[in-house]
Image (cartoon, rainbow, N blue to C red; front, side, top):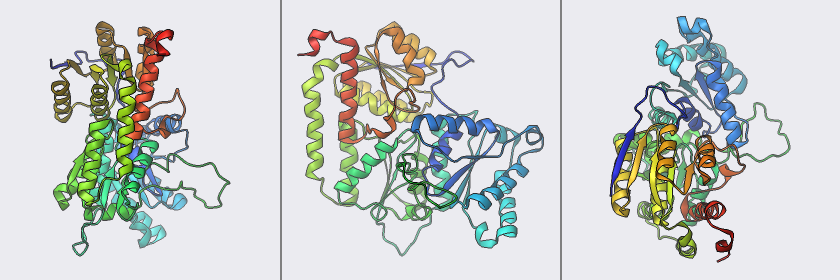
Length: 462
Protein backbone atom coordinates (compact mmCIF):
# COMPACT_ATOMS: atom_id res chain seq x y z
CA UNK A 1 0.00 0.00 0.00
CA UNK A 2 1.32 3.44 -0.81
CA UNK A 3 1.65 6.31 -3.24
CA UNK A 4 2.22 6.31 -6.99
CA UNK A 5 3.12 9.70 -8.45
CA UNK A 6 2.05 10.68 -11.97
CA UNK A 7 3.22 13.84 -13.75
CA UNK A 8 2.18 15.18 -17.14
CA UNK A 9 4.41 13.82 -19.89
CA UNK A 10 3.10 16.17 -22.61
CA UNK A 11 3.93 19.77 -23.46
CA UNK A 12 0.25 20.50 -24.13
CA UNK A 13 -2.35 20.71 -21.36
CA UNK A 14 -5.74 19.09 -22.00
CA UNK A 15 -8.63 19.97 -19.67
CA UNK A 16 -6.62 21.96 -17.08
CA UNK A 17 -7.29 21.67 -13.36
CA UNK A 18 -6.16 25.21 -12.58
CA UNK A 19 -6.66 28.89 -13.43
CA UNK A 20 -3.99 31.58 -13.67
CA UNK A 21 -2.61 33.46 -10.67
CA UNK A 22 -4.42 36.84 -10.89
CA UNK A 23 -7.86 35.39 -10.11
CA UNK A 24 -6.55 34.30 -6.70
CA UNK A 25 -5.31 37.80 -5.87
CA UNK A 26 -8.61 39.29 -7.04
CA UNK A 27 -10.57 36.85 -4.83
CA UNK A 28 -8.51 37.95 -1.82
CA UNK A 29 -8.99 41.67 -2.55
CA UNK A 30 -12.76 41.27 -2.89
CA UNK A 31 -12.75 40.13 0.74
CA UNK A 32 -11.50 43.55 1.91
CA UNK A 33 -13.87 46.34 2.94
CA UNK A 34 -14.27 49.03 0.24
CA UNK A 35 -11.39 47.60 -1.78
CA UNK A 36 -10.98 47.28 -5.54
CA UNK A 37 -8.47 45.11 -7.42
CA UNK A 38 -6.75 46.89 -10.31
CA UNK A 39 -5.53 44.46 -12.94
CA UNK A 40 -2.35 45.53 -14.72
CA UNK A 41 -3.09 43.71 -17.94
CA UNK A 42 -5.45 43.44 -20.87
CA UNK A 43 -9.24 43.62 -20.84
CA UNK A 44 -9.63 39.85 -20.99
CA UNK A 45 -7.69 39.36 -17.75
CA UNK A 46 -10.51 41.18 -15.99
CA UNK A 47 -13.55 40.22 -18.06
CA UNK A 48 -13.01 36.48 -17.73
CA UNK A 49 -12.59 36.72 -13.95
CA UNK A 50 -15.67 38.88 -13.47
CA UNK A 51 -17.69 36.48 -15.58
CA UNK A 52 -16.44 33.46 -13.62
CA UNK A 53 -17.16 35.10 -10.25
CA UNK A 54 -20.61 36.15 -11.47
CA UNK A 55 -21.47 32.60 -12.43
CA UNK A 56 -20.19 31.04 -9.19
CA UNK A 57 -21.41 33.59 -6.62
CA UNK A 58 -24.36 34.99 -8.60
CA UNK A 59 -23.19 38.43 -7.49
CA UNK A 60 -21.75 41.47 -9.30
CA UNK A 61 -18.11 42.29 -8.60
CA UNK A 62 -16.09 45.46 -9.13
CA UNK A 63 -12.71 44.89 -10.75
CA UNK A 64 -10.75 47.61 -12.57
CA UNK A 65 -8.31 46.99 -15.40
CA UNK A 66 -5.50 48.87 -17.13
CA UNK A 67 -6.83 47.77 -20.56
CA UNK A 68 -3.49 47.06 -22.23
CA UNK A 69 -3.30 47.54 -25.99
CA UNK A 70 -0.39 47.16 -28.39
CA UNK A 71 1.34 50.34 -27.22
CA UNK A 72 1.43 49.11 -23.61
CA UNK A 73 2.85 45.79 -24.74
CA UNK A 74 5.73 47.64 -26.43
CA UNK A 75 6.34 50.65 -24.19
CA UNK A 76 5.05 49.37 -20.85
CA UNK A 77 1.90 50.04 -18.88
CA UNK A 78 2.91 52.99 -16.71
CA UNK A 79 0.48 55.44 -18.30
CA UNK A 80 -2.38 52.94 -18.00
CA UNK A 81 -1.70 52.33 -14.31
CA UNK A 82 -1.24 55.96 -13.29
CA UNK A 83 -4.37 57.12 -15.10
CA UNK A 84 -6.34 54.09 -13.95
CA UNK A 85 -5.46 54.54 -10.27
CA UNK A 86 -6.22 58.25 -10.53
CA UNK A 87 -9.67 57.50 -11.98
CA UNK A 88 -10.41 54.94 -9.28
CA UNK A 89 -9.60 57.45 -6.54
CA UNK A 90 -11.68 60.15 -8.22
CA UNK A 91 -14.76 58.06 -8.91
CA UNK A 92 -14.83 55.26 -6.33
CA UNK A 93 -12.89 56.65 -3.34
CA UNK A 94 -11.79 53.17 -2.19
CA UNK A 95 -10.17 52.37 1.16
CA UNK A 96 -7.60 50.16 -0.58
CA UNK A 97 -6.43 49.24 -4.07
CA UNK A 98 -4.47 46.12 -4.96
CA UNK A 99 -2.47 46.24 -8.19
CA UNK A 100 -2.57 42.71 -9.58
CA UNK A 101 0.01 42.00 -12.26
CA UNK A 102 -0.52 39.56 -15.12
CA UNK A 103 1.61 37.57 -17.54
CA UNK A 104 1.78 40.53 -19.94
CA UNK A 105 2.92 43.13 -17.39
CA UNK A 106 5.39 40.69 -15.82
CA UNK A 107 6.81 39.73 -19.22
CA UNK A 108 7.16 43.38 -20.25
CA UNK A 109 8.98 44.01 -16.98
CA UNK A 110 6.70 46.75 -15.61
CA UNK A 111 8.21 48.30 -12.47
CA UNK A 112 4.93 48.24 -10.55
CA UNK A 113 6.36 49.78 -7.38
CA UNK A 114 7.74 52.75 -9.34
CA UNK A 115 4.45 53.13 -11.21
CA UNK A 116 2.57 53.24 -7.89
CA UNK A 117 4.89 55.98 -6.64
CA UNK A 118 4.13 57.98 -9.79
CA UNK A 119 0.40 57.43 -9.25
CA UNK A 120 0.71 58.70 -5.67
CA UNK A 121 2.36 61.90 -6.90
CA UNK A 122 -0.49 62.47 -9.33
CA UNK A 123 -3.10 61.79 -6.63
CA UNK A 124 -1.35 64.14 -4.18
CA UNK A 125 -1.24 66.88 -6.80
CA UNK A 126 -4.92 66.57 -7.76
CA UNK A 127 -6.60 65.46 -4.53
CA UNK A 128 -4.17 66.32 -1.73
CA UNK A 129 -1.56 64.55 0.35
CA UNK A 130 -4.13 62.77 2.53
CA UNK A 131 -5.63 60.95 -0.44
CA UNK A 132 -2.16 59.94 -1.56
CA UNK A 133 -1.77 57.91 1.66
CA UNK A 134 -4.34 55.43 0.35
CA UNK A 135 -2.97 51.85 0.61
CA UNK A 136 -2.02 50.73 -2.90
CA UNK A 137 -0.60 47.23 -2.66
CA UNK A 138 1.34 45.54 -5.49
CA UNK A 139 0.60 41.83 -5.85
CA UNK A 140 2.88 40.08 -8.32
CA UNK A 141 1.08 37.30 -10.20
CA UNK A 142 3.07 36.02 -13.20
CA UNK A 143 0.38 33.91 -14.85
CA UNK A 144 2.85 31.63 -16.62
CA UNK A 145 3.83 30.16 -13.24
CA UNK A 146 1.86 28.14 -10.69
CA UNK A 147 -1.92 28.71 -10.43
CA UNK A 148 -4.77 30.68 -8.85
CA UNK A 149 -3.81 29.15 -5.51
CA UNK A 150 -0.41 30.86 -5.64
CA UNK A 151 -2.06 34.15 -6.59
CA UNK A 152 -4.13 34.12 -3.39
CA UNK A 153 -1.05 33.07 -1.41
CA UNK A 154 0.99 35.96 -2.85
CA UNK A 155 -1.81 38.39 -2.03
CA UNK A 156 -2.04 37.20 1.58
CA UNK A 157 1.65 37.91 2.09
CA UNK A 158 1.65 41.21 0.16
CA UNK A 159 -1.25 42.65 2.16
CA UNK A 160 0.30 41.73 5.51
CA UNK A 161 3.78 42.91 4.49
CA UNK A 162 2.34 46.28 3.53
CA UNK A 163 -0.20 46.79 6.32
CA UNK A 164 0.64 44.79 9.46
CA UNK A 165 2.26 46.85 12.22
CA UNK A 166 3.39 45.63 15.64
CA UNK A 167 2.22 47.64 18.65
CA UNK A 168 4.72 46.85 21.41
CA UNK A 169 2.40 48.25 24.06
CA UNK A 170 -0.46 45.95 23.08
CA UNK A 171 -0.75 42.41 24.41
CA UNK A 172 -1.61 39.70 21.86
CA UNK A 173 -5.38 39.72 22.11
CA UNK A 174 -7.06 38.10 19.09
CA UNK A 175 -6.70 35.42 16.45
CA UNK A 176 -6.44 35.79 12.68
CA UNK A 177 -8.26 33.47 10.29
CA UNK A 178 -7.13 33.34 6.65
CA UNK A 179 -9.76 31.26 4.80
CA UNK A 180 -7.98 30.64 1.50
CA UNK A 181 -9.08 30.34 -2.11
CA UNK A 182 -12.22 28.26 -2.66
CA UNK A 183 -13.46 28.66 0.92
CA UNK A 184 -16.93 29.97 0.17
CA UNK A 185 -19.11 32.49 2.05
CA UNK A 186 -21.08 29.63 3.60
CA UNK A 187 -17.86 28.10 4.93
CA UNK A 188 -16.72 31.39 6.46
CA UNK A 189 -20.12 31.89 8.09
CA UNK A 190 -19.81 28.39 9.59
CA UNK A 191 -16.33 29.24 10.95
CA UNK A 192 -17.80 32.40 12.49
CA UNK A 193 -20.62 30.36 14.04
CA UNK A 194 -18.10 28.01 15.63
CA UNK A 195 -16.05 30.90 17.02
CA UNK A 196 -19.22 32.56 18.29
CA UNK A 197 -20.02 29.36 20.23
CA UNK A 198 -16.71 29.82 22.04
CA UNK A 199 -17.96 33.28 23.05
CA UNK A 200 -15.47 35.04 20.77
CA UNK A 201 -16.56 38.35 19.24
CA UNK A 202 -15.76 39.23 15.66
CA UNK A 203 -13.49 42.25 15.40
CA UNK A 204 -12.48 42.07 19.07
CA UNK A 205 -11.41 38.47 19.62
CA UNK A 206 -10.90 37.35 16.04
CA UNK A 207 -10.60 38.73 12.52
CA UNK A 208 -11.35 36.94 9.28
CA UNK A 209 -8.74 38.27 6.85
CA UNK A 210 -10.02 38.43 3.25
CA UNK A 211 -13.61 37.91 4.41
CA UNK A 212 -15.92 37.33 1.43
CA UNK A 213 -18.84 36.10 3.55
CA UNK A 214 -20.79 39.31 2.90
CA UNK A 215 -19.02 41.00 -0.01
CA UNK A 216 -19.77 38.02 -2.28
CA UNK A 217 -23.03 36.99 -0.60
CA UNK A 218 -25.17 40.11 -0.57
CA UNK A 219 -28.82 40.70 0.34
CA UNK A 220 -31.17 42.18 -2.24
CA UNK A 221 -32.66 45.24 -0.58
CA UNK A 222 -33.99 48.64 -1.54
CA UNK A 223 -31.42 50.77 -3.38
CA UNK A 224 -29.29 53.00 -1.19
CA UNK A 225 -28.30 56.53 -2.07
CA UNK A 226 -24.64 56.05 -1.35
CA UNK A 227 -22.52 56.41 -4.47
CA UNK A 228 -20.16 54.78 -5.17
CA UNK A 229 -21.76 51.60 -3.87
CA UNK A 230 -19.71 49.05 -1.93
CA UNK A 231 -21.17 45.86 -0.47
CA UNK A 232 -21.30 45.46 3.28
CA UNK A 233 -18.66 43.46 5.05
CA UNK A 234 -15.10 42.59 4.20
CA UNK A 235 -12.00 42.92 6.35
CA UNK A 236 -11.23 46.50 7.30
CA UNK A 237 -7.76 47.91 6.71
CA UNK A 238 -7.20 48.40 10.45
CA UNK A 239 -7.74 44.67 11.00
CA UNK A 240 -4.80 43.94 8.72
CA UNK A 241 -2.75 46.51 10.63
CA UNK A 242 -3.65 44.78 13.90
CA UNK A 243 -2.87 41.30 12.54
CA UNK A 244 0.70 41.58 13.85
CA UNK A 245 -0.67 41.76 17.41
CA UNK A 246 -2.53 38.45 17.25
CA UNK A 247 -2.20 35.40 19.49
CA UNK A 248 -2.17 33.11 16.46
CA UNK A 249 -3.02 32.87 12.78
CA UNK A 250 -5.11 30.02 11.38
CA UNK A 251 -4.51 29.57 7.65
CA UNK A 252 -7.20 27.10 6.63
CA UNK A 253 -5.49 26.52 3.28
CA UNK A 254 -1.73 26.27 3.69
CA UNK A 255 -1.18 26.66 -0.04
CA UNK A 256 -3.50 29.69 -0.29
CA UNK A 257 -2.86 31.94 2.69
CA UNK A 258 -0.02 30.04 4.29
CA UNK A 259 2.50 32.61 3.02
CA UNK A 260 0.70 35.36 4.93
CA UNK A 261 0.59 33.28 8.12
CA UNK A 262 4.26 32.37 7.74
CA UNK A 263 5.18 36.03 7.26
CA UNK A 264 3.45 36.97 10.53
CA UNK A 265 5.16 34.08 12.28
CA UNK A 266 8.65 35.01 11.09
CA UNK A 267 8.30 38.79 11.36
CA UNK A 268 6.14 39.18 14.48
CA UNK A 269 6.35 35.76 16.21
CA UNK A 270 2.62 35.09 15.70
CA UNK A 271 2.17 31.28 15.85
CA UNK A 272 0.68 29.73 12.71
CA UNK A 273 -1.75 26.82 12.46
CA UNK A 274 -2.76 25.11 9.25
CA UNK A 275 -5.53 22.78 8.16
CA UNK A 276 -8.90 22.87 6.42
CA UNK A 277 -11.53 21.63 8.91
CA UNK A 278 -13.37 19.14 6.72
CA UNK A 279 -14.16 15.79 8.33
CA UNK A 280 -13.70 14.54 11.87
CA UNK A 281 -9.94 14.72 12.52
CA UNK A 282 -9.33 18.00 10.71
CA UNK A 283 -12.24 19.67 12.52
CA UNK A 284 -11.07 18.16 15.82
CA UNK A 285 -7.62 19.68 15.27
CA UNK A 286 -9.11 23.09 14.44
CA UNK A 287 -11.39 23.11 17.49
CA UNK A 288 -8.66 21.89 19.85
CA UNK A 289 -6.20 24.52 18.61
CA UNK A 290 -8.80 27.30 18.99
CA UNK A 291 -9.38 26.16 22.57
CA UNK A 292 -5.63 26.00 23.23
CA UNK A 293 -4.89 29.46 21.83
CA UNK A 294 -7.84 31.18 23.53
CA UNK A 295 -7.71 29.25 26.81
CA UNK A 296 -11.44 28.50 26.51
CA UNK A 297 -13.28 25.22 27.02
CA UNK A 298 -14.76 23.46 24.01
CA UNK A 299 -18.51 24.20 24.02
CA UNK A 300 -20.72 21.21 24.77
CA UNK A 301 -22.85 22.06 21.73
CA UNK A 302 -19.83 21.48 19.47
CA UNK A 303 -19.36 18.04 21.01
CA UNK A 304 -23.02 17.31 20.22
CA UNK A 305 -22.44 18.35 16.61
CA UNK A 306 -19.43 16.04 16.44
CA UNK A 307 -21.59 13.23 17.75
CA UNK A 308 -24.26 13.92 15.13
CA UNK A 309 -21.66 13.64 12.37
CA UNK A 310 -20.39 10.34 13.75
CA UNK A 311 -23.95 9.05 14.19
CA UNK A 312 -24.76 9.87 10.56
CA UNK A 313 -21.65 8.01 9.39
CA UNK A 314 -22.53 4.95 11.49
CA UNK A 315 -26.09 4.95 10.12
CA UNK A 316 -25.10 4.88 6.45
CA UNK A 317 -21.47 3.77 6.22
CA UNK A 318 -22.58 0.55 4.49
CA UNK A 319 -23.24 2.69 1.40
CA UNK A 320 -19.78 4.28 1.39
CA UNK A 321 -17.60 1.42 2.64
CA UNK A 322 -14.94 0.35 0.13
CA UNK A 323 -16.25 2.65 -2.59
CA UNK A 324 -13.47 3.93 -4.83
CA UNK A 325 -13.42 7.67 -5.40
CA UNK A 326 -11.50 10.04 -7.66
CA UNK A 327 -10.86 13.52 -6.22
CA UNK A 328 -9.56 16.60 -8.04
CA UNK A 329 -9.16 20.27 -7.20
CA UNK A 330 -6.97 22.59 -5.15
CA UNK A 331 -4.38 20.89 -2.92
CA UNK A 332 -5.80 21.79 0.50
CA UNK A 333 -9.27 20.62 -0.50
CA UNK A 334 -7.94 17.39 -2.00
CA UNK A 335 -5.98 16.65 1.19
CA UNK A 336 -8.93 17.33 3.51
CA UNK A 337 -11.53 15.53 1.39
CA UNK A 338 -9.23 12.52 0.87
CA UNK A 339 -8.91 12.10 4.63
CA UNK A 340 -12.65 12.54 5.12
CA UNK A 341 -13.34 9.90 2.47
CA UNK A 342 -11.07 7.49 4.34
CA UNK A 343 -12.90 8.30 7.58
CA UNK A 344 -16.19 7.20 6.00
CA UNK A 345 -14.72 4.01 4.57
CA UNK A 346 -14.07 5.14 1.00
CA UNK A 347 -10.83 4.72 -0.94
CA UNK A 348 -9.38 7.80 -2.70
CA UNK A 349 -7.64 5.80 -5.41
CA UNK A 350 -6.87 8.73 -7.76
CA UNK A 351 -6.30 12.34 -6.66
CA UNK A 352 -5.36 15.21 -8.94
CA UNK A 353 -4.09 18.74 -8.47
CA UNK A 354 -2.04 21.03 -10.69
CA UNK A 355 -0.57 22.91 -7.73
CA UNK A 356 2.11 20.47 -6.53
CA UNK A 357 4.17 20.90 -3.36
CA UNK A 358 6.16 18.87 -0.86
CA UNK A 359 3.54 19.70 1.77
CA UNK A 360 0.90 18.09 -0.42
CA UNK A 361 3.04 15.02 -1.05
CA UNK A 362 3.70 14.53 2.66
CA UNK A 363 0.02 14.89 3.56
CA UNK A 364 -1.09 12.35 0.95
CA UNK A 365 1.60 9.90 2.06
CA UNK A 366 0.37 10.19 5.65
CA UNK A 367 -3.20 9.43 4.57
CA UNK A 368 -2.12 6.45 2.46
CA UNK A 369 -0.08 4.97 5.32
CA UNK A 370 -2.65 5.69 8.04
CA UNK A 371 -5.55 4.11 6.14
CA UNK A 372 -3.56 1.46 4.27
CA UNK A 373 -4.78 2.52 0.84
CA UNK A 374 -3.10 2.78 -2.57
CA UNK A 375 -3.38 6.30 -4.01
CA UNK A 376 -2.34 7.51 -7.44
CA UNK A 377 -1.27 11.12 -6.83
CA UNK A 378 -1.35 13.13 -10.05
CA UNK A 379 0.30 16.47 -10.75
CA UNK A 380 -1.23 16.70 -14.16
CA UNK A 381 -4.30 17.79 -16.10
CA UNK A 382 -7.71 16.15 -16.10
CA UNK A 383 -6.94 14.26 -19.30
CA UNK A 384 -4.61 12.02 -17.30
CA UNK A 385 -7.13 11.96 -14.45
CA UNK A 386 -9.87 10.77 -16.81
CA UNK A 387 -7.69 7.99 -18.20
CA UNK A 388 -6.83 6.74 -14.71
CA UNK A 389 -10.33 6.75 -13.24
CA UNK A 390 -11.65 4.92 -16.32
CA UNK A 391 -8.87 2.35 -16.12
CA UNK A 392 -9.22 1.75 -12.37
CA UNK A 393 -13.00 2.01 -12.32
CA UNK A 394 -14.16 4.40 -9.61
CA UNK A 395 -17.61 4.64 -8.03
CA UNK A 396 -17.70 8.40 -7.46
CA UNK A 397 -15.98 11.65 -8.43
CA UNK A 398 -15.52 14.67 -6.17
CA UNK A 399 -14.49 17.99 -7.71
CA UNK A 400 -15.66 20.97 -9.72
CA UNK A 401 -18.08 20.50 -12.64
CA UNK A 402 -15.77 22.11 -15.22
CA UNK A 403 -13.68 19.00 -15.18
CA UNK A 404 -15.94 16.35 -13.75
CA UNK A 405 -19.35 16.41 -15.40
CA UNK A 406 -18.37 14.83 -18.72
CA UNK A 407 -16.07 12.28 -17.06
CA UNK A 408 -18.84 11.24 -14.66
CA UNK A 409 -21.33 10.96 -17.54
CA UNK A 410 -18.95 8.76 -19.54
CA UNK A 411 -18.47 6.47 -16.53
CA UNK A 412 -22.13 6.47 -15.52
CA UNK A 413 -21.29 7.55 -11.98
CA UNK A 414 -22.09 10.54 -9.80
CA UNK A 415 -20.16 13.78 -9.29
CA UNK A 416 -20.18 15.45 -5.86
CA UNK A 417 -19.49 19.10 -6.54
CA UNK A 418 -16.74 20.74 -4.53
CA UNK A 419 -14.38 23.66 -5.08
CA UNK A 420 -14.42 26.49 -7.59
CA UNK A 421 -16.10 27.21 -9.91
CA UNK A 422 -19.55 25.64 -9.59
CA UNK A 423 -21.99 27.19 -12.02
CA UNK A 424 -24.20 24.29 -13.14
CA UNK A 425 -25.93 24.25 -9.76
CA UNK A 426 -27.22 27.05 -7.54
CA UNK A 427 -26.44 27.70 -3.90
CA UNK A 428 -23.20 25.81 -3.45
CA UNK A 429 -21.35 28.97 -2.37
CA UNK A 430 -23.90 29.29 0.45
CA UNK A 431 -23.57 25.74 1.77
CA UNK A 432 -20.67 24.96 4.13
CA UNK A 433 -18.55 21.84 3.97
CA UNK A 434 -16.33 22.85 6.92
CA UNK A 435 -16.84 22.10 10.60
CA UNK A 436 -18.85 19.20 11.93
CA UNK A 437 -22.17 20.40 10.52
CA UNK A 438 -20.66 21.35 7.16
CA UNK A 439 -19.01 17.92 6.98
CA UNK A 440 -22.37 16.34 7.84
CA UNK A 441 -24.02 18.13 4.91
CA UNK A 442 -21.13 17.11 2.65
CA UNK A 443 -21.41 13.50 3.84
CA UNK A 444 -25.15 13.45 3.15
CA UNK A 445 -24.48 14.66 -0.39
CA UNK A 446 -21.86 11.96 -0.94
CA UNK A 447 -24.23 9.22 0.26
CA UNK A 448 -27.19 10.55 -1.70
CA UNK A 449 -25.11 10.74 -4.88
CA UNK A 450 -24.07 7.11 -4.39
CA UNK A 451 -27.72 6.17 -3.83
CA UNK A 452 -28.69 7.91 -7.07
CA UNK A 453 -26.11 6.13 -9.20
CA UNK A 454 -24.83 2.98 -7.47
CA UNK A 455 -27.63 1.46 -5.39
CA UNK A 456 -30.67 -0.40 -6.83
CA UNK A 457 -34.09 0.91 -5.85
CA UNK A 458 -35.00 -2.02 -3.61
CA UNK A 459 -31.79 -1.58 -1.57
CA UNK A 460 -32.32 2.17 -1.09
CA UNK A 461 -35.28 1.45 1.18
CA UNK A 462 -33.26 -0.63 3.65
